Each structure stands twice: as structure tokens, then as C-alpha cells.
Image (cartoon, rainbow, N blue to C red; front, side, top):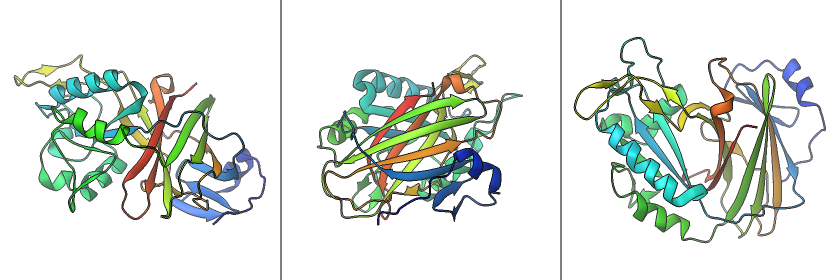
Amino acid sequence: MKKIYKILAFAFVLANITVSCDKIEQDNYLVFSGAVGEWFDGYYGVGDHSQRAIIEKYTGVRCINCPNADIAINDAVAGYGDKLIAVAIHDSSVFTRPIGETPCLSTPDGDAWSHFFGVYAAHQYPTAIINRTLNGNAWDLFTPTSGINSRVDDIVGQTAQVALDVDAQNNNSTVDIIVNLEFLQTVGSDLTLTLLLIEDGLVVTQRQPDGSDDENYVHNHVLRDVITDIWGADIECTGNSGEKRIARFQYAPSSAEWNLGNCHIVAFVADKATKQILNAAQCHIQ
């Protein structure tokens, strides 16, 4: 599966490619809306072999139970440290319609996930899923006001199959992202790498459990953009234990309203067929 890539400057590629769809292939580069990436052989591996979990919370500013879920998730993140990564996703349901003149936090990418995982159809908010795991033949969706720790414990207690770390540097109009992968076990299935941009510190009116509206509510972990295709970029690898790979991306954020100083890049590796997440990492944009 390994490819030999041409060495070209990212700036040259961006200047000479017109992106008209979510993903196209050109000159051995992975080209996405707003980003271009390339795979290389790794050398040093990943120092931290921790198994991490991602909790994806589907939420909305008109959801009166969502503030209680925020409290529970924030407490869990504080307890697990960097082993638990939170992402707050606003889809196109009635619960996400802005209150008054406040900004809309919905994204097309989050909406696509909401429909795929059955959140939108169930119409129950807040809803969460951790590492996109299954409960029998169904997605393990739950209300994240409780039940978080037992699910996270089941995941972070496992031995990681793949280790990864991510670094992101703000380079004026673009963000340069490097993801290091190291296979700790042989993985036989095809894998994908997905990159997200999330933002903290957004003050947007939120409806409260008592029905009142808090105009000073602070939203964290808010999904702003899926940098890759929503189902990720194919990982070019053999999947053999000990293999090391590096993915380099240059990403041009599509909105000047995003405060990159409050943003993180989240990276996760998933099984291409099942969509289940194997491991994840995040970093602040420097």
C-alpha cells in the first residue's frame, strides 16, 4: 500500500490546484477542501503509546439538558486528562437554531455525521458516542449526563494498536499540521486518518434547564471544520507492527471568524469499514 511521493512545496500545490469537491487525488497528494496532505515514512515513532478516547457530543443551543451534559463531560475531561478528547457537534436540528442574533454553531460535516449515526433521526439531545463503538449491532449512543466513565474506562484500559501524536503551527494564512503514526500491533484492516478543527471559548446564548437563556454561556470543544474528508484520508501503510508513518497537511481555515488562538487540531485513526476509532490525539495550534 506504500507509495513513493513527489517532493513538491505545499505552497506550489495550493497555488495550482482548484478544489471543487471534498476530496480529489492529484500528483500523489491528498487534496481536500481547504487542505492538502502527503504521506511519508516515519523515523522516530511516537513517544506516548497511550490509548485515548474521543467523546462526540451532539448538542444544541436550544437543548435544555445540554448544559448538564457539558458539566459531566468537562468533569470527565478534567479527570482523564489527555486520555479523553471532547468534541461538541451541532447539526441542523431545531435544537441548534440560534437564539436571537447569536452565531450559528452548526456545520455541514457535523450534520452528515448526525444523520449517519442516527442522532438526527432519534431527535434526542444531548446524545454522545465514544470512539464510535457499537453496542451489539447498533451504535452505542447514550445521554452524556451519566455513563461516561464506564465507557471511557473500557477504552483507555486497552492496549493501543496504533499510537499517534499531532502538531499544528499557525503560519499566517495556513495551519501546518504533522501527524506521526506508529503501529504497535499489526492491523489487518484499512484505516483512515481524520483531522478536525475545534474551538474553545465561544460565548453564544444557550437555553438552560429552567428554560431561561444564558447570553454569556461559554461553549468549548466546538467542531468548526473537518479538515479531511468527513470519513478521513486513507492511511498509506502496510499495517505491520513497528511501521512508522508521517502525514503532513497544510490547511487554510475557511472562516476569518475562527480564533485560531483558541483552537485545537484533533486527529484520530479509524477502521475504514466499521468507522470505529482506534486511537486519537489533539494539540493546541501554536
